[in-house]
Image (tube, rainbow, N blue to C red; front, side, top):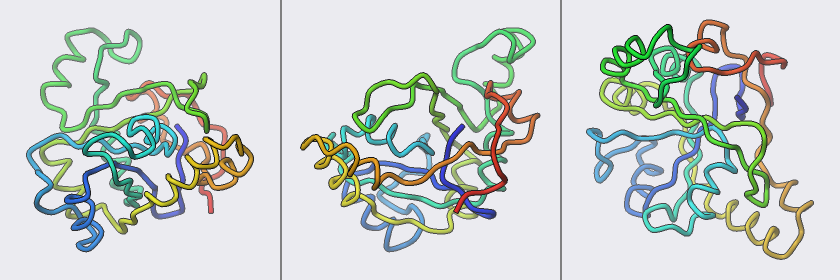
Length: 200
């Protein structure tokens, strides 16, 4: 799993409408018209967020928010998560997976990560869906900063559209393999990291 992170925080991305994004940046958390009762998905991969939002062009996803959250909170979410679909080897049985899914406030999904041109890569990008107590913790405890990075998305998209891939690559957020504890790796079906403790 790759992400931008420091000793204390990890960066995730979300895409929202102007109405939700404006008040989130002002409040430095998500408030009305954001709805706590719905599952909300956080994504550490900037380029997967660009793929999902169509470079911030899809309806309701016109604004890209960079959200810094505590690493403790992020790892709590993963430790209390369950894969969205059953994978043999990760769970002892389909029944054990179904039991965990019924009680877990976090869903974990892996999708092909994307290059700067949004082509599929061999590695996977993680999405983390939060509901119930996980959403409350996210909004009230984990978020340390929210920044609107829609202009950055627009600049990178402009470089890509003009064929300036080196310029696009140079503006991408710097990420690295995130060093998750082994029990969490096993729980979410991730591979063993080979990296340093933090990135700048």
